Each structure stands twice: as structure tokens, then as C-alpha cells.
Image (cartoon, rainbow, N blue to C red; front, side, top):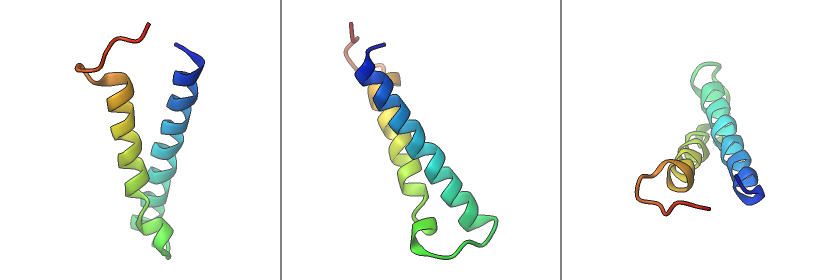
Length: 63
């Protein structure tokens, strides 16, 4: 795996974990504020990016 792909995967995982945490805080612990309410967006966007860059069967194989 190239360095660019490693950095991208790390960033995507940060989006997924951060968004998941914010959504959890909002739903379970009753967190207030717009940032926690929008937590699902970065999580879903990170999942989409992981799918597009690493898991999609239609992507070209990186060498």
C-alpha cells in the first residue's frame, strides 16, 4: 500500500470514528448542538470514500 493510500485510509477512519462518536453522543447521551446532530454525515461520507477507494469491485487495481 502506498503512502498516499495509507494517509487517505487514516483520514477516512478518522471521519468514520469521529462521526460515529458524535452520533452516539447525540442519540444516547443527549448531546446538544448542531455538530453532534450532523455527526452521521462524516461517518457515512467516510464509509463512502472507503468503498470508492478500497472496496469497490469496479475500481482499477492500483499497483
